[in-house]
Every structure is written in structure tokens, then in C-alpha cells.
Image (cartoon, rainbow, N blue to C red):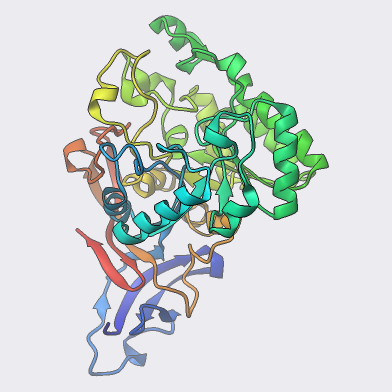
Length: 428
């Protein structure tokens, strides 16, 4: 590989506190040799022709902490090849995959298979999760120790929640002993049973059963009480309500934990569902505009640590049904950054805060050396035209499934190039 020289870029790397105009040098091994304002035409070999980015932004490759991939079992919805191509188009170079496959990722042999498939088919960094419980049934714990030794970086039941308090206590104790990360999808089944959208006026108007925000809050409060006694690594996958954010603010000084939010809940509200738009049937559900505003403020004041895409590809047949029968979830990895940039362009959140929530914060929580532009590290990064306008068209999406929640939405800001280990793997 030849050395690459980039100049005249706006570089943002929250991990290394870089926010300046400068350049970057990638060495023959695909690693970062130099970065920052000292890299300019005056300091480069005269024989080299640097790439002038003309003010575009260089940021670390995004780390998406919540991605569903169809392999194994649901390859017709998504596979590692299509996932990685879709991710690269959105500047995502590392993903944490959920265990809700067929079979479930709950034993060592399945992990070995998953890692081989990821290595052979994927162009990005794959970090698989295993389930908290066997077959995600919420009854018996998986073998945390054996799975962690195989490279599993976190444990979650994905779209399911540990309902049994006694079992959750045992899981936390094991996680503490083995220093494992637990990621919880917070939803009380008894309170949310048969619910499809946020409980409120819109649900009543559409004649749909609702999911009250207390279903989320009650699990969060229970887990934080347990966490106060059993101090393990604990992460709340997605917040969706203002009251949940209030609980987080109250407890963050007393108990050590982290939390995330889906870009869907930061950008949309229950009114967007309109007349039964099944592509907006999500979990957690879209809630009121007041909830969305509090979530944005929570990101702004760093109460919320991470933004995720909650990329859940579903084939069209699973979505072109009545609302009650339609599958839950939306494809979102390709639009994650651009949709997040809306919060910057409308003045809600600082650019550096958004980039931190998409790069260095998730990497820190996961304890992986990604999401930064440190000298000597593999050059995983993307180039972004912050002002480039574009319109989301499902036929233009690279993901195998086209169930985007923001069809025809006008966005500002687009990834133009993505590099993994110094190799350019996407360009528009």
C-alpha cells in the first residue's frame, strides 16, 4: 500500500481532543502516521501529491453499538456482505451485532461460526454480542466466561428484557466477577403487552394498543437499584422517554453506568406515524415531541452517552402488512450520521458532542481501540461533506432490506469516502 497524504481538512477526533484544520498521513501498513495542523504542504515530500479535501471533515470511523445482521438464519434480510457495504456508505467502520439470529448466539460453536463468516465476508470490524440467557428465553444464563474467552465483548438479549429480578441479580453478579458488559433493552412485558406504539392520543386515534413510558422506566429503576449493590459494567441500550432521562440524571452521580439512544427517537416522534406507517413501528416506540426534545437535551448535556442506529433490516413482505402484524424495526445504518447531523445544523447539539457519541464514547464503553485517530492506530475513518444535500430514497439504499423510517427525507451532510485500515472501501 502506498502512503496517503490528506491536507486542508477539518479534523474532529474527540478522543484526542482534536478539532482543527490540518491533514493526515497514512503509512504503507494502513496506520495513522501523522495528523493535525502540522500536516500541510510545507511539511510533505515535494514528490508527493497530497489529496486536498478543501475543507471537508475527517472524523473517526463510526462505532455503531446496536446492529442486527441476518446471518445466520435470516440472510434474506441482511448478511455480512450487504451489512458492511451499507455501513461503509454511512461512515460506520465498526459494529456491535445483536445475538437475535437463528440459531441464537448463545454458545461457543455458534460464536466460532459467526467470527469466521464475519472475517470472510465483512469489510468492516465486527464485534459480536452473545445472549444473556439461553435461546433468549429469560430463564437460564449463558456461559459468560467461555463466551468472553471467545471474543464476545458484551451480552444482551437484544430486543428482549430480563424480566426476572432474581435472574438479573445473578447475571449482574457474574458480569461483575468476569468483568463483562451487560446491555439491557428496558421494557416491562406486563406493562407493554400487545403494545405497538406510544400510549397516548395517537394510539387512541389509530385504535392501537399503547406502550406506556413507565414500562421502560420501571426496568431502568429496578436495574439501577441492583447496580447500586452489584457494581458491574451496565449499559441501557436505548432511552425513549423524558421520564427515563430524569431517572438517569438522578442516578448518574450515585451509580456508574452508561446509556444510549436510537437516532430514530432523537429525530422522529409519534406524529410521524401518520396513518399506520408500518416502517415507523419501532422498539422502543416513537414517543411525544416533548420526549424527543428531552432526549436531545440529554445528549447535549452528556446525560446520554451514545447514539445508535438500531439497524434492524426487515424484508418488504414483513412490513407491507397491517400495523399489528408488521415486523418491528427500521434500517438505519446508512443514514445514522447524516440524520445525527440534523441536530448540528438546527443548532440543537454541538458537532463535537455528536461525533463523540458516535465514535469515542461507544468504543470506551466497549473497551475497543476504535473510534479515534490516534497515531499508530489502524486508519479507520471517513470523510464528510458537512453541507452536501441529499434525499433518502429507498431504492438507493445499499442494505438488502429497504425499510427506512425516513423515506424521502431531505438531509444535509453526506459521507463521501470511508477507509478501513487505510484502504478506501467506499466513495461516492
